[in-house]
Image (tube, helix red, strand yellow):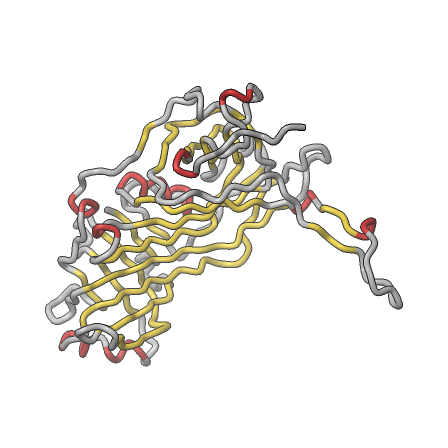
Length: 340
């Protein structure tokens, strides 16, 4: 048999994301988007956990029939980094915590939806990787692309630095699915109409926006000069059950445990730090806010308590690095707000 001649360039990869009418199937619901990815996404073929029978006392090696793939536990992760324009941010927040209306807030009373196979509650999606398959158009077998259906978002990290990526924010994303990936040519052949999100002209996306950044209060003496920030949201998503023993589709998913949210800001160490100093140790609630008043279009906000603090002396000037672990206040003002 001759060696294969197909070469798949990573530069040709495209990532498409869209919601369907039901979890794990159905037709397109709304708009399909091609995201401005910054590096190749993770690509996985169908895999399942390899499990082993107990080791028999006195036996010092395994036989192959002691090993078995357990497809009832299969879960696949899809990760990628994307240029985080305002529309991209809204879309990612929708899939992360079901609020993508532009205000994009996560509250302490959050309750996950019922993600059930064939159901229509919650926010789930199909992720397609054009040119992520193993054949080219000339192969004739329609295996150019990869498709992952029934995807749930499990983590989102927004990073933004004044001296990196041209001052533009970047989103690092991870989705999971318990459904088997499939091969298609729908994306390469443009069978699916999609909107390409290649970047927008919104002021706070075009370059770094460093006006009106506050710690603890938006009053005088609390404004800081930031160099970078990052916001992280993560949750544990687990599959439940198995509806059949042919495709091994899950009954659905559940969120296990609670949210893990945090925000880090690196900023200039100056006299305005005095108003924030006690928050490092007195156990009281505080917040970090990028973008000024609640009416401003640019709002990166995390409420909670200080979990880490350090002084960075590796630059020409001293800098503070503060991390807040997210937690809602009793008044229910929200844990996280992400809008641009």
